[in-house]
Image (cartoon, rainbow, N blue to C red; front, side):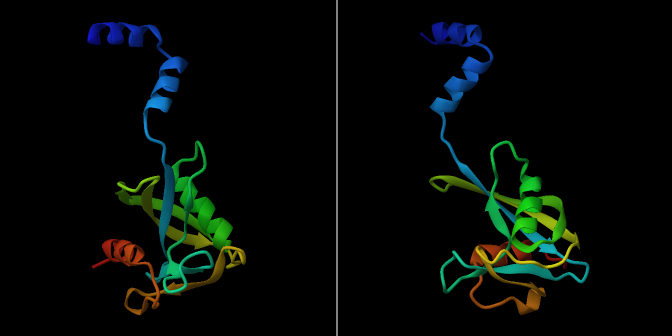
Length: 151
């Protein structure tokens, strides 16, 4: 039986193989977070309107759109939420095991732009030093910041 399946698989090369793989495997959304730092070593944190009231502060984050490279998602999300321009850096973390999503985090460096927050999603945006992070912050984001902070 395995030989028959292998032969059929070889015969259907190309788009049909991709279609079979698509239907046979799990589908995930990809959440992308930017650990954005400025030249002073401060981190960009946003007070998110849609997040729990007791934990509204966190890093810029959003979902990748179909066909988008994840570092470009960081650039797009930061620009949409704050008006700021960043250059993506190294991959910091990939977290799986969620039911419907995978989380990816990248470092990013602020390179310009004027702060203009998206009033629909974001209530406030500020730069914070590692030792002055705000209360009500997502614990996973605190860990991301600490893992990328210079010693």
